[in-house]
Length: 143
Image (cartoon, rainbow, N blue to C red; front, side, top):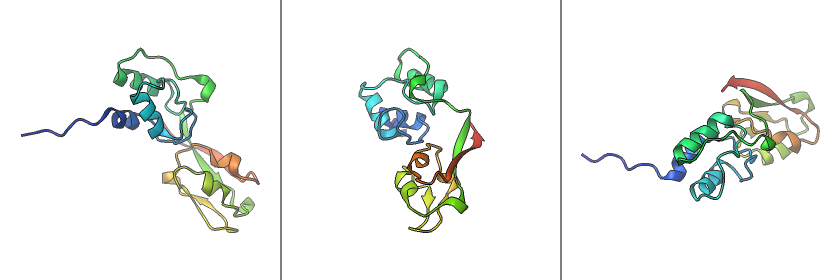
């Protein structure tokens, strides 16, 4: 009986990352960061959403010395943030939809938009994209 083939290294790395797609690591998302780690072109300390536990998990997988995540890249939050659109203030510009890397915001042009909560990763990229400041990041689930 043959077992399943082991997952490629890049896939194992990607599964350890938080999948926020926030870009704080300097890459366009979690997968590109995982690919750079697998090639040895990136360090394990670049992911604020993963925090110190994520950096330790990457160090263990890659068999390199553990170190804390780079605080200059951002803050680790013990609570996963969630975007909330203040409906009364939304002008329907669609800039938040364009900024969301995981398609968690829906709505039409000149209509109110809303966040699909289970899809929101809390990256916060929608906040600076909003010209009327109608998006707030609120606490959601504990990590």
